[in-house]
Each structure stands twice: as C-alpha cells, then as structure tokens.
Amino acid sequence: MKNIIAVMLTPLLIACSQQPPASAVGNIIEQTNLDPYYECIGCSPEEQKAVEVLQDKNIVDKNAIATILGNIKQESKFIANICEGGARVSYENCLTGGYGIIQWTSINRYVNLGKFAEKFACDPSTFDCQLHYMVNEDIFIRQLPYFQGSGLAIADYMRPAYRWLGWGIKGNREVYAWDYLNKLQLTS
Image (cartoon, rainbow, N blue to C red; front, side):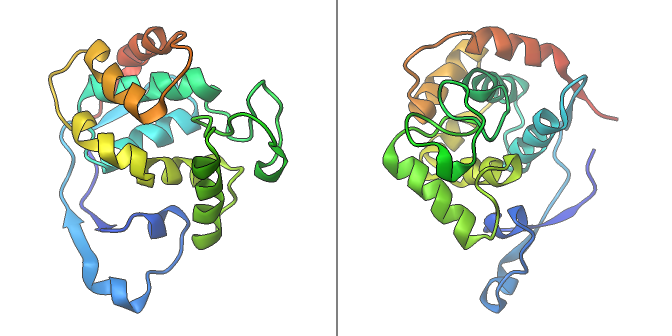
C-alpha cells in the first residue's frame, strides 16, 4: 500500500517536476491509500509506472488497469519514440501516422502532445511526458469514469478503450489485457 501522498488537483505539474504556481498552492489535497494497490509483477519499468499513474487516477479495478495496459501494448509496446510503422524517431520527426505510446494520430491530438510538453517542460518523445499527457488528455478524461468503475469484464472495458483510442485494428488488445491481469498482484 502507498503511504498518504499529497496530490495536485492538476497532476500535470507533478508529471514534469515543476513547482506549482502560487495560485495552485491552495488546491493541494490529501489522497488516502488506494485500496487495493497493484504492482505489475515481471513488467518493465514503463509498464509499472503506468500501473501507478492509473491508480493515482483512481482506476483501481484490476480488469480496467489490465485493459488499459493491453491497449498501450497493442499501440506501441510501451515504446514512446515510435512512429506508426515502427520507426524510432523524435516527436518532431514523425511526419505521418500515429506517434507515441497510444499512437496519437489525428493532427489535434498530436499537436496537443507537443503543447502539453512545452507547457510542462517535458520532452514529448519520452514515456513519462506521454503517460502524463495521456491521462490528462480530454478524450481519456471523458472515458475516465468508465475506467474508475468496478466489476466489469475486460471485454466490457474495451468499449471505453475504443472510444478513447478509436483503433482501426483491434489486434491482440484483449490477449495482452488477459496477460496483464495475471501479472497484476496486490501489494502487502
């Protein structure tokens, strides 16, 4: 279990290690331990970081976490500097198709990743910057209440995942999600 932590109502600032502006100081709240708290056993540091950030967003249903992880794996295999088709390039050098951990494809979503990175002084080609943009992107935020629910099957969580990502090819998303389900273990 996590210790009690101070969380910004605007977690964007935390994402990039910036000091909150004076106007935000009054917006700090305490968040109690998340129960249950999962770790991803045998997962990469990027996968484990995603599990932590999702739980910080109050996504605590094991199936919901597994579904989101499965979708990220299908989109990018958790590789941040990947352009659609597999080229490993910086944000600025991905000129066609999707980019990053969820393959931001539409021009607005791609440009907004760059704006987020500029605003919060992080590199849009890195996993941490993209992960924090992902959970604060308006399309994800609209689906957040569905992921914060509980008791649904992975197949049911795929519906908000589709609304969030709008994939063209479903691929192995569900297979990956079931694999993550087996790797997510409660901590003591």
